Length: 267
Image 1: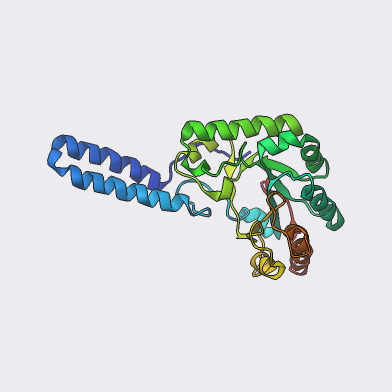
Image 2: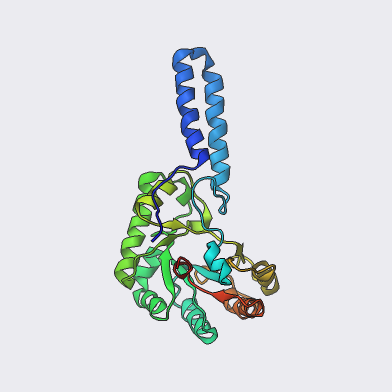
């Protein structure tokens, strides 16, 4: 497992220095409090905007593509979020078996506890189960360090107990976060993973649009994001993930790309 010790990014180090200087300025010259407060608020606004950018590296390490060695091997990763779902996930697993490809499932802890056999089946079929928080809370990005720790640790415990395999990766709900997340990830030895391309398949039911978002410019090292949980459905009632996967697999095959799990890409 690669070194996951917390190393503050240049922006986080600058933020700490800014706060210290602002405090010092107010202590030395209280009349400067407006300037100090303005600088701190501007800094917080920047951090908030970066937290709303899922593919940002400014707040900490973040897998937006596979490592160079995996890219050189023509590998890509299919990642599947928000499950397990008792209806959609078994169909996805059958489709993955049909195409003989491996995927990474970012599972929600409470859903995994509800459908443990389904999680075990994911691993039994050669895929990986990773951490997508315990409850997938809509206000996840507003949590502090203790809140992040509770959510991630609970999911780690749940998923490890069910599958016998400790998650190595974490994906934040909707990809949103704040600066308190990175030290928690380091303490739990988790790597943050976002994506290179996403299908927005929880809200877009137009198959062609989702296909294009996932397949356009597909390249070695790409990390693709689709959903088995909360999946949108076509006008015929078919989960979008099932409708688009064959085309994505065909595009990858034509480009001589091979699907691997994120943990396999570490090799």
